[in-house]
Length: 259
Ligand SMILES: Nc1nc2c(ncn2[C@@H]2O[C@H](COP(=O)(O)OP(=O)(O)OP(=O)(O)O)[C@@H](O)[C@H]2O)c(=O)[nH]1
Image 1: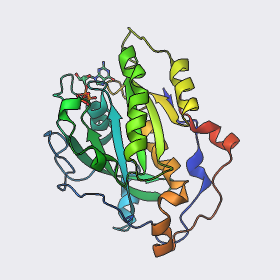
Image 2: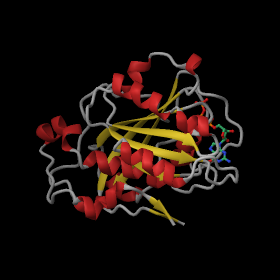
Image 3: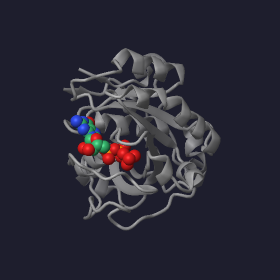
Image 4: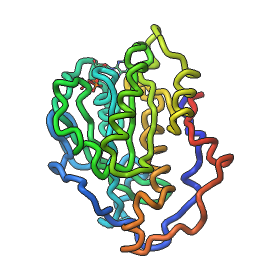
């Protein structure tokens, strides 16, 4: 069973109108939010209390998230699970970048996520700086059954450091494929790495759904708790926090735990 330990969402409410689009270079894709791969066609989904989100009207924050990590760790599969709630046993490698949009409601606040799914293979990575430009959150994925993908995490973090334009970008470390029996990296190792590099952490399976919703939600919650990431918007539209963000203890360190 999946459980988000962090209840950080309970810590704040938008006092004014729902957040409007953040300024920044978030690119709008086709209406289905899909580039490259053919999955995801159809109207935008409203997975979390969808009717309520719809009732919020068009005014909502647009947050840019980037999904990073070695090839075949399951980046596209996580995104596919999150946006379409499906799993494909065979997916072609991403070439360049794919792009998806998803609306969700987090503690009564409607947000629109523009999620960039980047290519893990070096030869398919082009325009790398643009992946990171204006991103408020990053999801860094490794495969718990492949140690090499865990060892490479530092390289990804360095690239992130080089290109991220937001100094306090929210980082989530995701150990994927926990449904598989042949683990090479245990949970403690993942957690330690995340703590050392001030990242949120969760283990997931795109195949079984474990942790997937939580991974994306936690990043959004943390972004919403970091006013500097959407400060311009706040000034422009008068969105205010009615209550301060929860303390470290209340937030349980921001880690999601699977029980
Ligand atoms: N068993 C299992 N297989 C998974 C999981 N997530 C992804 N896969 C499989 O792993 C393979 C690679 O998944 P992708 O989502 O294409 O990986 P990627 O990280 O996007 O790869 P690139 O596009 O090359 O960067 C596919 O065959 C998926 O079906 C998972 O949680 N469990």
